[in-house]
Image (cartoon, rainbow, N blue to C red; front, top):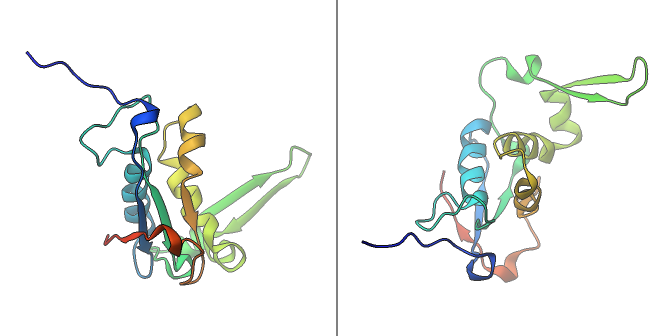
Length: 143
């Protein structure tokens, strides 16, 4: 009988992946990226260890939303004061902070625990096609 081997954080080997978000639906991109960040695409996945890889997303401003989500999907920010709730539609949010849409979607697909705070730091999102992580030689990932 073979024993189950669990990964330790010292044994994790991290890779870098690059995703071009141009024309990809937001939800489909977020699910794939969340799995890679957590390490669920690896055979030796361990739930209590951050064993995922780094992901660089480019062209965040060219992401796709289906249906009427550009106008109907809202992002809320509450300051804590009376009348302090601000609402932005997805279209306005894309104009101001195109990276936020992807970050918000991916973060919502991660577990709500301490590991998710470590995992989300391995996600790098850029609005344009250029990024400063060329030295890590990220592999192109098709979604």
